[in-house]
Length: 65
Image 1 (spheres, rainbow, N blue to C red):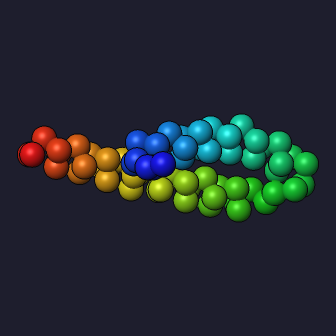
Image 2: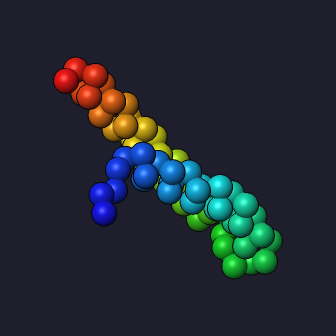
């Protein structure tokens, strides 16, 4: 099965929603440090940013063909 950039964008978006919903509860329960949570979310946001750049480049390449 082929995994497209669009598939990856959807997966990362879903993971970001999950982390934003669950991490505050984990922090409150003492199971996750707030600094670590912030860093993990920032990393996932950067992955999303890079994927969106890649997706745009792929879209522009297709338009040229």
